[in-house]
Length: 454
Image (cartoon, rainbow, N blue to C red; front, side):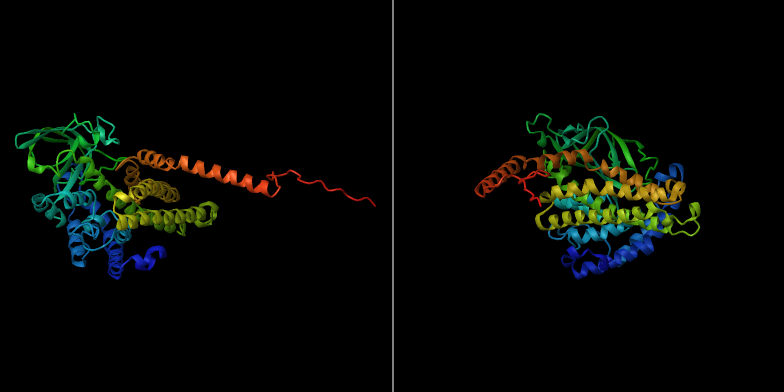
């Protein structure tokens, strides 16, 4: 809500954004969170889980559009299709959407569509925008982003092996993809696929390209949907697919051959910060459930309410500190993106990408622990939230990749800081010498005093 905008950035939030923030918060609290249970009930059982999508989503989308809560994620100043909000302003809204399973899609702000729409808006040509961006922005279709492969270490995108070979006026694709989020949805109409077009290029960052592949193109086999700690995320799903001589027109290339790394960096940066924004909201909801549990008068282990047990209030306090600190990291990254662009904010985005999911997992786990058996089953949203957020330590680059890069960047200061410290030590020695002093040592008597005897 607008009244809860952190003071440190409140002057950067427009009056329009504050009004929208209040509307988003009310919509999530009063419409989306109650609708989450309806969504689960409408998914169905067995194969029917993948044959349609819960109608409650369409009801929510109609309400969101009527309220103007639509495509809020495209930042102003970067996209002509933007509704006019900054990354900071959207971050505050996305935090609320992260509290509900249905809210992001209801507002047409759900991954992977957000990242895919940004790719098309930023890099797509007019024909590609007309064919795919327009229906995505209207919420008529959904999409998937296909990068990760089961047979290679995909954390290093240079390893991506899907073969994209040009034959006349067509590209022919062969290979496997998995963790293709959204591929299970029957509304998924377009795959944005990364593959190798020039394996002989001496520059390993110019070997990859991105191609648009309609989901109904012949030669695509969807083998299975992967589960996340037992959750299959139907009907969205995380697909394992094989491409066998899949043919698309040359006009389906995005930006040009060898531009794949440029595109995925432009896509994954904002995507990482969007995940972090929503994750803050999930952590806040976990605290809400924790507070409800520890104040439940029917739960009195050992004759006391849960809140009266010493460690519980420490959990609450630490959760508040950790969430608020993580929020500052996320909002700082958003402000840097607004002022300098996503590329300049890579370090800040990486910091948030690593810290926020780890924080949220800790906070959610405290709530799980307070609920006991109920916390790990379907009676609360906590288990599903934990499983979903655990994937974020792997998605868009595992923690270790970002930590290694951040470590290398930080270590670049090593020589300079060593030089500065040595200079400071030398100057200290000089100043001591000029004053006839020696360096004080703890516990050492510098001067002996003679006591007079009576």
